[in-house]
Length: 262
Image (cartoon, rainbow, N blue to C red):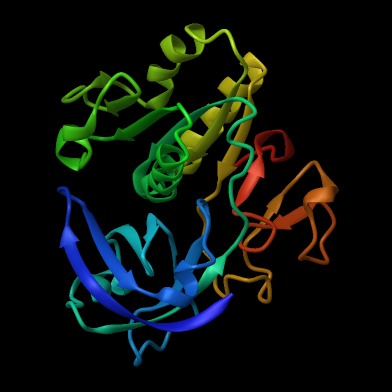
């Protein structure tokens, strides 16, 4: 974990609701892995206790990127930052996905959970590991991956305006039924989506690893504010609470078998 003053390379709108920011952050970039996140101080005059956690969406040549949606004061400040501006960040934080070549990977993303899944997708492409990627949004205009679809990249929309109508779950049946080898899910998105993916995995006896999204203050286990119930005490290393793990430090990635609800 490092505290780095990153330089903004670009900050652009990539769909109707999503922004992408590329940061030059060589110290953090050299140590990060798919699934990890950074904690951002939106500006030097920020008076709130909490920084803003953002999943890392890519890493290359000393640069990282984030994908975010403007929903409040912090993200509004981020949207107005320009190339060459500086940004105080801490990272890389949290654990990360592993074991990509034991089972066939199926990647599932919804909402801003698209960011770490894209990082994992790029990682698997570089390693030449075959996999499926399913990305879900509410409408066609929210998708920014439309020109990259193929047999292994599937897009869904809640309203049916593009790709498969429904959530990422609606795209799973055909993929799972067409595979004779073991499958492993890697997912990130809003809680209802993750709970649905976890139920599907349980019903189909599929290994499932979920990156949870929650509010975090410190990002590395000091404040104890992002506790989540777990059924496996061996996942707990950063908290004094029995049966509760910390999303920021013990996660954000958990085995779906170990968490009753996301």
